[in-house]
Amino acid sequence: MAKANLKRSKKTRRNVAEGIVSVNASFNNTHIVVSDNEWKVLTWATGWSSWFKGAREATPYAAQITSENACGKAKTMHGMEKARVFVKWIWAWREQAIRWIINSWIELISIFDITPVPHNWCRKKKIRKP
Image (cartoon, rainbow, N blue to C red):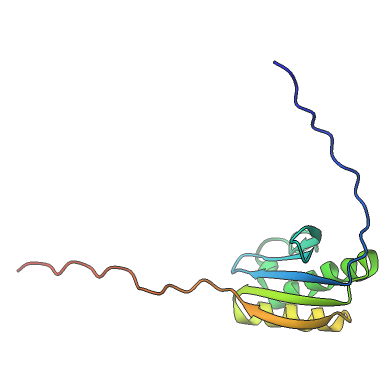
């Protein structure tokens, strides 16, 4: 069998004035992904990559530091000035993350809440016969 060519492409620093920040704040961790308008990832950060371990990953402070790290990289390395923010899940964590996106001098164009919400609830249990 022939081996596939598994070379990685050379990382380039793209200058992106406007981009997208995705904040996924769950009960266990906070993931922040910064991408350009075509959803190509520029930088990312998680609670683990910000040196939080275990239960500390799932705190508002961890979300704050994580967003500061991700947006700081996007600002310095790629020159991002404006962003659309997509947030998912828990209120306290994502509020802290949005606050620190603003503190990193990135202007917010819009904030979207993409938390999944069921439109019809689960099927009710069958009534037990006497």
